[in-house]
Length: 136
Image 1 (cartoon, helix red, strand yellow):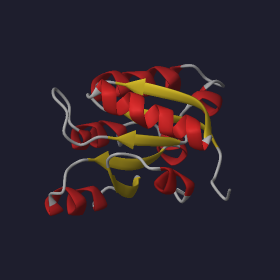
Image 2 (cartoon, rainbow, N blue to C red; image 1 turned 90 degrees about the vertical axis):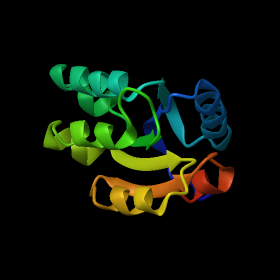
Image 3 (tube, one colour; image 1 turned 120 degrees about the vertical axis):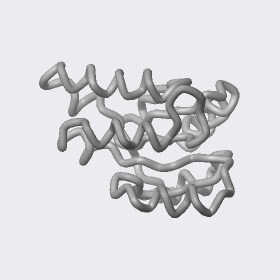
């Protein structure tokens, strides 16, 4: 298939079942060796911050693609993006963000377009076709 290969991807979604389904889909399409899952945006941003502190490891371990849910408790997807923009430039350029959401709110789509780090807006669930044509 013509699907792009990524070293690692990250799923950020407060719904564990969605994370599991999306993880299985990523494994089935085989676009990534490593899949990190976080059920909260706060833990995901902490994970990225901690990686930045470990010099030499970040390039190998940072996810190439982050699938980010919008509607989450404590810290939603947009709050995550605001924190993500405070990370080092090298981290921001390595991690490409795909908004993965069940939201059909047009305001969410237009708001996500204001973030240059967001490369795509995809509706849940992840499908084989979405992953095979991802190319971010």
